[in-house]
Length: 229
Length: 296
Ligand SMILES: Nc1ncnc2c1ncn2[C@@H]1O[C@H](COP(=O)(O)OP(=O)(O)O)[C@@H](O)[C@H]1O
Ligand SMILES: [Mg+2]
Image (cartoon, rainbow over all chains, first blue to last red):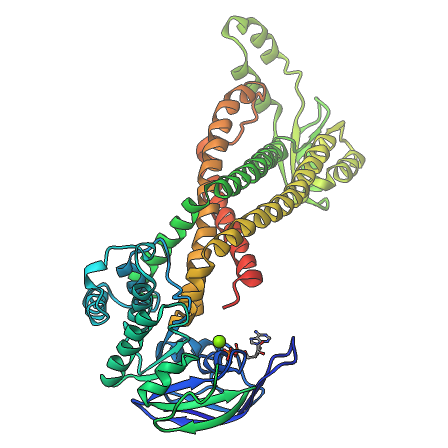
């Protein structure tokens, strides 16, 4: 489903080798934590998955797309197969919760009836149906992250990638979000979560890919974070 | 492209216009100014052109034969004239026809004068030469004058010359003016669109990672540019046609038997021409911004 084969990435402007000969395979429906200290290369890895960056060497396959040979004009179709969640939520402050989620459908050309059907469903899935008319500014951080998760889910992608989804949240709220991610994973969505939230990783007993200085140092089923922070 | 997408692009384009009203006003204003200035030159040029055509028709070369020459000799000269280079047609205009024509042009109370004239027609037989190339009028006139029996040759080459040179100057100035004004307009519109992209950079970023196609991201900006140009064009067309309508009558009074182009004859050129140019300028402005600032 997702495969890295000997992938290396060096940022040309800084000369930083952000990923060094990384190989792994993630099957459909898995839940994978991507861990490592700040600057280890986690975000770079997620950017390679959506072809926001391209590797210097190696092969990447995502949801049947061979990223090396994928032409630029097909990249949007790759991205439709991946839901993205970010630490900073990336919501539009002038749109309501409903409109923020609907936006993701609108801009890929979905019909009104599809939008009217999917958006309420996905808002109740993340527990925000009752706040559909509010603006992001009226919501707590945890609620905003739920909106961004709803937006990631609304086009029913087979894979969700969350880059530090709890980075801006207090521990209790973070706990709720992590719980929600596992719930969504149980419904069949592959989940890749980059984080340095040690306690969750240790507690949840999921597969762990650990990166350090761009090198994949560990790949364990039911692993632990394994670092002292 | 699906209809609902087109609707979305237009809605976004209009939203973009309203969101940055100051730059929108500046853009529309510069398009109006450019097209009005250009329009004045084009209308002036079109009229000079039409005046030139009318004068060309009115100022064929006239070749006069002596009053007492007999008609056969006159016709012999006529066929010689017809064979000159650049002569399209040599048309006989007999002294009887000329008198008749003259009579129609004067008042009845001068009937006395006419009857005297009829007894002894003082007019001469004439040939009117129409040319294949009016610029050769002087040369043709010189050739005609050399023909044995020709008494006098008249032509208005100098007038034609100056009309043609005005027409050419106006054409050149219009083209340069258009290029300069269009470049300024494109530059200002592209800056307006750039600001729009900047204020919507968050939206654009989201569109990219949720998988909107490049064209889906571009279209609203293209339409925003087109609308800027189109709105400017419509307003400019109104101003120019209103101005033309009010100036037209006053100028026509001084023009004698030369007619200016009526408003109805130029309105299509103005409206369609302005719209094409306005929309073209707008699209060029957005294209420039998209190329430089929208890295999709
Ligand atoms: N766009 C970029 N240009 C240059 N260097 C970058 C860029 N993005 C990240 N880096 C560098 O690459 C390394 C990995 O960064 P990143 O993937 O963001 O790490 P993480 O997400 O694990 O904190 C860091 O040293 C970072 O400074
Ligand atoms: Mg990161």
